[in-house]
Length: 323
Image 1 (cartoon, helix red, strand yellow):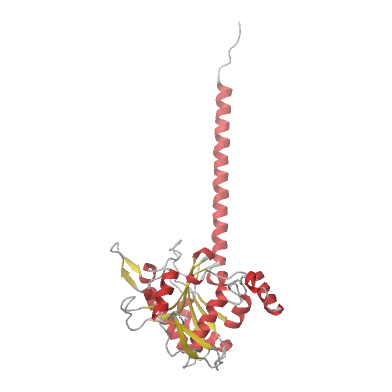
Image 2 (cartoon, rainbow, N blue to C red):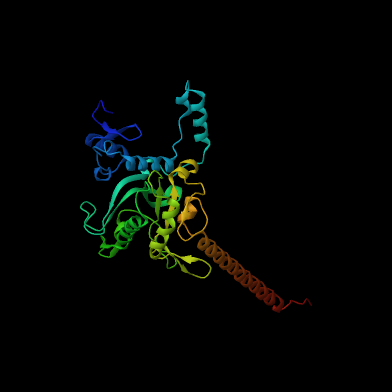
């Protein structure tokens, strides 16, 4: 890629690894291959390596841990035994979420301004995942290297809230949440329209302990995520499902592993359960089953009544008596 001017040396990170980044030409090529506008391809990240690049590298590792790509075993012929064993383990491991085209990085979320020219007060998502084919239509991901305080992360989540609440005129002349003009997600259902979920991935290389940050962060952001009692389950209408996990656990278990903590819950869950509302789904499923059973019973009563009426009609018909 460097030979064709698509990539360049971005410096060396603190761990000694060389960072490669795409040039402008490389971003254009990636835009074509992924079928995305060039404006969604991020920047060339010049100088990232010289400044440490710990955050961009953590973002990349998060994408890989979520994606869990499967190696092509045919290409490992002649490789050492330990490499083949690791590859076999990766092939047999639970699948990840989406494809590489499902992930976008450094996506502006304008609370003011436009998509192309964001104003002040908005956020920038480290990763946006769209994988409806895998049960995750829309997920925003923030990666923290444990340098930020709970208060700083809470301030960023408040910017998310402002963005999710922002309404703009759509092509039909009606107001619509700005985020829905770009992404698809579950529409309002039975009076409940939660905001898209936000996953926080803690990469513990900084001085701050995630086990202390998360409880404090839950307290600070309670108005953003706390549900309301709703007859057997919690309703999260216009609330943000906020989930936390560690990059180490994410690498080991992937999105299907029980390593995700939904704020307000006390147990770890797989990602799909953590971003969803299983209790609500179970309650609504039971209600639907009862309604179905009642409808079937009603139809059976109608059938019996019709049979009874036919029988009475037959019994009341005059009988022809012979001479």
